[in-house]
Image (cartoon, rainbow, N blue to C red; front, side, top):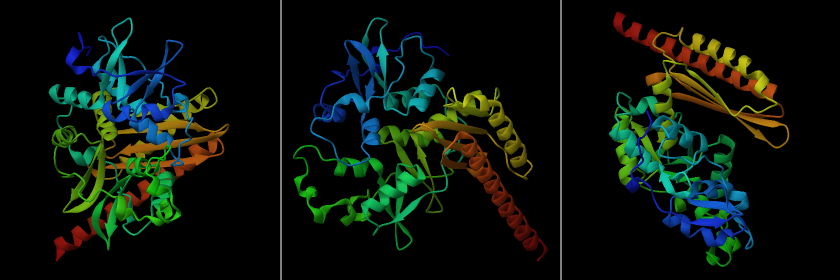
Length: 378
């Protein structure tokens, strides 16, 4: 479906900067604007938003002369002829908070993802999807007394941006990468009290920084209700509970992925992205391997595979990072990632782990059936 015209009220005004502008000048603007546009010699380069900025700030420290150049994310310019399906896909692929909008001659503002969620609600794109179908599982947790350095390391190793915080095994809060980097990114004289050794990241506990009352929703609720929560609270994720205990995490990316899968599920169930000139030759092999995994999974009673996403990212000169998400309908999503020195090893590693996860799912279901059978014969 193509938009006849994106109404002016859906487009947010923003600012434009040269790529050599110091990042210190732009950071305050990221609080006021969902994204800013970056140019080089009047030519569009990309955007910077708080998400891409904090994603880049892994060392928690910025030089005073750091420019915008390393923080730019290249995203497509949308127009009034961009389809809603393409909007969803662009946001999902780029993982940004806003896309630049062009009137055909110049960029006049940005369309932010909260506005996109509102559009999706009004168009009924989230109907017949439950939270449990879209959420990511399992929930990754960290102890409240762990330090910030440990939290950062866990997020980096597990490729996640948020962790549930437990205190004596009970839910105590939520901590995100955004919380950590925002609190510890040092610019000039900002947060001088945190520059002392006694207030370093390794000496501050997770409980000192966590959000103590994160938004939450029951896993049986509709995705429509969950998205309304995201919109009304202007947040990017919500904790999913089952019988009062953490069962998963629902993010804006999960919502977009579920909609992409639902609207294209009749065409295909396997989505491979990120292949480059060196890895593209493996496309057919990957598709066949994933088809085999889907067939194996669906041999399990009660299991229906909705879709598989296989995302590739090159790391350095040779290594490849692979992220696979296998949606098992109302049983949640299996999410795995690996980074290996070469692409063949990455494929082999991730496929072996997926087979192992499916075998564990089969064993779990067999155990449940035996327990139920035993109860019926008592």
